Image (cartoon, rainbow, N blue to C red; front, side):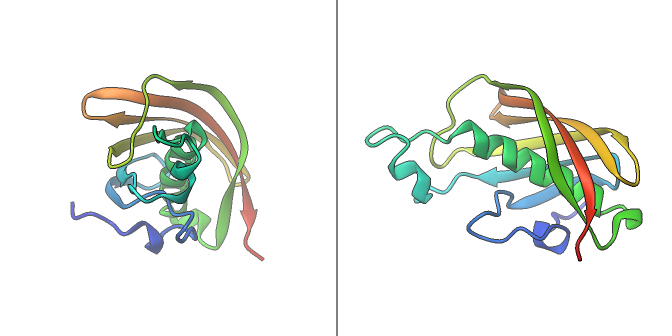
Amino acid sequence: MAAIDPTTLIPHRPPFLLLDAIDDLEPGLRAAGRWRVPVDLPILAGHFPGRPVLPGVYQVESIAQLGAAAVLADERFAGRLPLFGGVDRARFRRQVLPGDELRLEVELSSLSTRAGRGRGHARVGDAIVAEVELMFVIAPTA
């Protein structure tokens, strides 16, 4: 499968697009993708000066954006918008540094016309750096 441009599926755009490519996709079920942390990402200047580390919330958001792509690739959800409903069991296992490439995976465990749940993780190399359970609601865009 050729990589998919995430902007063809999700509404996020720079500077809040935290997903470079979707490499594997089963609409409504699962997805795999990647995001290379820009060395000039503005938040890194203050987190932390002299020792930049990607905040965990950015890692969770990157996983969530991949999950949103898996939802919106399902034709049942055309014209809808998955929004965070909750985050459970977020764990951060290792620091993520500028230039690291996050390899992301997400699996949707339940999906209805109004809401869903999923689990995802991020890796750098072979090491899991973040894992999270996500809850979301599916809202109309208008």
